[in-house]
Amino acid sequence: MDARNPETSDSGPRSAPAEAARGTAGDASHDTDVIVVGAGPTGLLLAGDLAEAGLRVTLLERRPGKISNLTRALVVHARTLEQLDARGLADELVAGGHPLASLLLFGGATIDASRLHSRFPFVLVTPQFEVEKVLERRARRAGVAFRPDSEVLGLDQDAGGVTVRFRTPEGIGSLRAAYTVGTDGFRSTVREAIGQPFPGKSVIRSLLLADVRLAREPEAPFNVGAGAEAFALLSSFGDGWYRVIGWSPDHQADDDVPVGFDEIRDITRRALGTDYGMHDARWISRFHSDERQAPQYRVGRVFLAGDAAHVHSPAGGQGMNTGLQDAANLSWKLAAVLRGHSPESLLDSYQAERHPVGKAVLRSSGALVRLALMQSVPGRVARALATRLLRSLGPLANRAILAISGLGIAYPTGPGAHRLAGERAPDIRLADGSRLYEVLRQGRFVLITPADEPGTDHPTDGLPSGDRPTGEGTHPTDNRPVTVHWRSARRTAVLVRPDGYIAWATDATAPAERARALRTALRHWTGTEPGDDGPISGALAPAEEATDTPAGR
Image 1 (cartoon, rainbow, N blue to C red):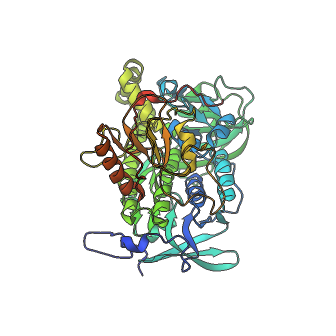
Image 2: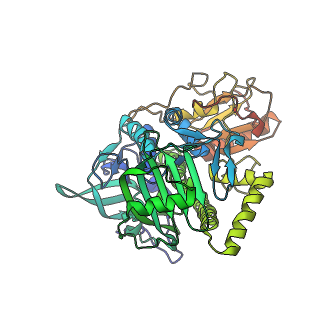
Image 3: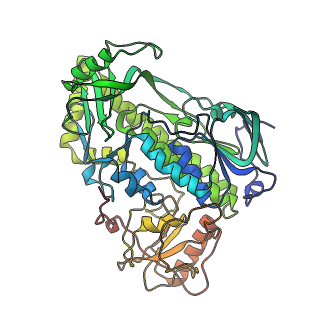
């Protein structure tokens, strides 16, 4: 067996044979269907999705079984909130956070999120541990087997599965599964075990981080300041505690050098003009920020997601969001293959779709942090110019907020694909008054058709979507899409993936041609075909977005 690849070739990693990977859910030779390593937000979302699909999931975490309130991530962007909405979780998170209409970047430059065509036209400020609480509760309810205090030591894989070795307080143990996903962070043991390098470099040294109380409340719950001498970010947790992140060229030291409270105060005053009477720090640390990305997110039966696959600067608050969207992309594909609905080759699309996204985030966040921290005269001029451009050029500002929010992400498609294929599906209103992302809570493909055409003749069509079922084994194993109808008279047939991206669409008007195109699409994406009761059609355009239903704030 080879931890790095069950099969090797001169051209690099190759996947296990498709026939060996299809329909293996519940295989008696496996202790579990999927092992997820790392119980951060990415691992929790992925594990919860798989368990809700009726799969056996074990989540290994080296930490004790208590969520820490010490965390670096602070914001949740619109596309991530849409993914959480498709799981019935977004409104609870929004209710406990601080929605901001704009995000301050540097030098007075702001990104206006209120212009986003989404149910969530804002940036949600909420600490990572609040996201983890919501995701962990869902994962436990769905039947995920949690194994805290389990430090992964290594793994081996072959054509039939993956064996993961780990250490607990009781001793050494092992588990075997069809697939393993490493969501175990920057120092990923899983990444190391499969021989994946992590090329890149450190972009910021000696970033200071502290959780503090303030004598005076800031003007806004999220504040950023950058000048010639310092940079600081100050954000409210909503419970009287504030997170401050600071950097100064005058305070450079290795990560293990202790941080004095006066050092935090000094940097904050220089960047923001005041320290707001900062006192009672419960946590102070010094760290560095890297830009790194694994070349391959998949090696055989092992995958990487979140910080195990990519890390980048905190600028724009995209780290946790990118990891959560990795999980949303991978989970439905693993479920489809394990249930025997899709060929094993579908899993290769995870690398094809998510690796370019990670690369783009590295570039954009790196550009933001370099602009914010430039100290030379030419650097300050460049920052001032960038600020003016963002303020004055609407198209540039729109591209920036679409990139940072995640709403602008689209996935590559093959030649001849419809112009909508690969695009994010907006949360449209449907004929019965429901929203598309409410229907997506069933965890299945959604076929959108006009009301005057019959759909796929699926026995659950026409029933209220409700929330996605929870509990092991309760999720439907049928992979045929849920059919819903437009409230408009549009005629373009659209098939939406479980992760809210458009798989296929057609503008064909001839009934036989439309039926043939749909049959081919359903066979390709879901392994099913429509019934024989007639052709299917439908319609989608960006103008149909259900922006008339605001999220609770």
